[in-house]
Amino acid sequence: MNRHTDPSSALVLPGTGRDMSRRRFLTVLGGAGVGLVACSRGGADAGRALPGSPTSTTLTPIGGTVDTTPPPALAAPTDRVLVVVELAGGNDGLSTVVPALDDDYRRLRDQLALDPDAVHWLDDEVGLHPNLSRLARHGVATVEGVGSDTPDLSHFAMEERWMRGDPAGTAPVRDTVLGRLTTAVSADGRPFGAVSVSGPNHHLSANAQAVAISDPEALWFLDPEMDWVEVKALREVWGVAGGDRETDVALRRSAGQLNDLAATLAAHGVERDWEDPLVAEGGPLGPGLALAADLISADVGIRVVHARLDGFDTHDGHGWAHDQLMDELDRGVGGFLDRIAERGLADRVVVATTSEFGRRLRANASVGLDHGTASTMLVAGAVTPGRHGEPSSLTTLDRDDNQIATTSFDRYLASLGQEWMGVDAEWLLPERAEPLGLWA
Image (cartoon, rainbow, N blue to C red):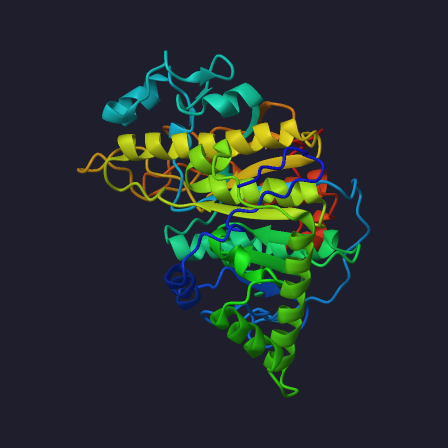
């Protein structure tokens, strides 16, 4: 395989090589997602993708309506990029940004307390998990005590609240925060303003155009020169969805957008670099973030990126499981930040973590941690390292013996949207939320 070394033009896309068998291709088509889902303005089935087919999703949230109020003018440079890495399952903030010398922490965590000599100290109170060595080298801003005043211990409820920017879970159903953010920053007419590199995800299903890539190895089937019968048949299906129903119109629009994207990729004339360290060694996040780095470098209009790392629901064996997850986070995000810096884009890109909630203070019988409330978020890249928010108390707890959030998560989202991306937080979120001053 050829490797393109010019960072100003290289678009190293996983899976553009011709090494996929027909069996593998058909397996991809038969799965939950064919590899790409285009989301465009207009449509009928909000947030729902047709299994096995690239589709346009609807822009009307289920049970709600689209707010057609146009976004205000941006207050930041239009080339900034936000990469959101979702730590799915509920990341334990105390095992990520560690008060390793705190007596209460060491007493409450007992078997799970981390070694003070191993953490990467940020100041004289907290340090990063021992496995976050790359992020420690890059420098991070932390936001502590993040959560809701009225928490819910359900993954589904809190994930939805985060996606809607609604800490209380009481606001009317509306577009997701990342969807609205994409709408606001896509005003330059580029075909795609956002990409999800962890598969079709409703974080981006809002009144904006986005592409979700569930399997980068399927990208090559968009190559206009591919002449397999199966590929030709799929293209014919895209093109012959006749009728005036919204779903037919949306499908044709989606096919057109995917063809445009295919032409863009073909114009770069690249093949997958199987030896790329970020792909080979970046863990579960590596291939997707390598693709994100290539799309950002290619300047195709991507301004919002969503990636997802699963496994943070550590009810059993929290210590070893979380150690592995922190290593995967560090390899993926650390390698991505290295790539962005190599390409001269370090001042344009911010990586921010989210997670639906934290974990309990005390371990259960399986030496795991059950669902908690407040957690700690990390922001890396073009941000000044430092601590923000306020650590949740280890001794003053709620009635369920969980920590009490000190920083409402909509304030965190307001900072990412308004301070970094220049999108007015009042328009972005259901309720007014004051940014935290991460870039003050």
